Amino acid sequence: MTERRVVVGMSGGVDSAVSALLLKQQGYEVMGLFMKNWEDDDDDEYCSSREDLIDAVSVADVIGIPIEAVNFAKEYKDRVFSYFLREYEAGRTPNPDILCNSEIKFKAFLDHAMRLGADAIAMGHYAQVREVDGRYQLLKAADGSKDQSYFLHRLNQGQLSKSIFPLGALLKTEVREIARKHGLANHAKRDSTGICFIGERPFREFLNRYLPTQPGDMVTPEGNKVGRHQGLAFYTIGQRQGLGIGGGKDSSGEPWFVAGKNMANNRLIVVQGHDHPALLTPHLDAIDLHWISGHAPDTDNDYAAKTRYRQHDAACRITALSGDTAAFDFCEPQWAVTPGQSVVIYDGEVCLGGGVINGKFSAN
Image (cartoon, rainbow, N blue to C red; front, side):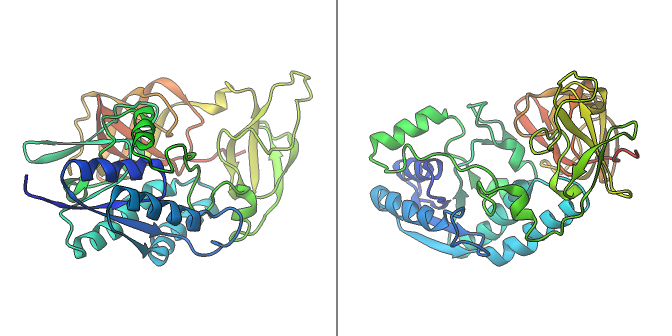
């Protein structure tokens, strides 16, 4: 094999470390690149970027590869965080990790790697790429519990053609064992959770730095007032925790859930019971569509979809498709479909792409 140069995005975690290790073992010329994407408060208790860089450098030394750090904080703020704030301000719930992949990890990072002379980039994502007749497909990972194709559904042909996912055929348990056997100090490091710039801090506290609180009434779909909210931006459809209201007046004791938002009147619509009809919908509309192949799928076929990451595939059909918008009907009603989140479409193990869920909030 002609030695190819691969630049690996190394986060300090075990997944990217093992990705680099495996590529080195396969004969690639491997270089690590640590991304710094957030600077606003990287000196507080919730930001681990300094420790993550130390871990990345440590494992690169064990593997025997060079590593550099690159700062994409400006690009992240311009391309991802500004969108994040606009969406929350509009009452929607965005998924910035999806935009981070398409705009930072597989665009800004990819461009930087190409300038360094790379033939390809690699990430520690759990997903697979397959070439079929000159076109690239994004496939689910072998480890269904770790599959991250949902977050990668906005990648295009050019990005996939330059991307390697060394962990796609491995289970997470196997990845940790590989790291342990090769003496990587982060083999047992806990997986990162949440968005990188938020970490595990209280979300409302973080968002309030950038968006003002606008308290208002919590009401039932019938218009009965049951509490007060701190601002519609701080809540998402299906949310149960943090509402500050107990059981209902009917003494059912069932928990309350957010079911909608009335932006015009600053009202948060809440209902009792996980399976309340207001939380279930058999239909959704999506905008800002992206298809990995470059072509929209056939509307006559049966597909599966996810309307959130931690969800089993749900059988669906595309009932309308026009340019940048589409309508989807599900065989079974979906729970807490959330405007701003992404609906991602699959044909078996192949991720076709998806779009941003568009929805009208309750008018109550």
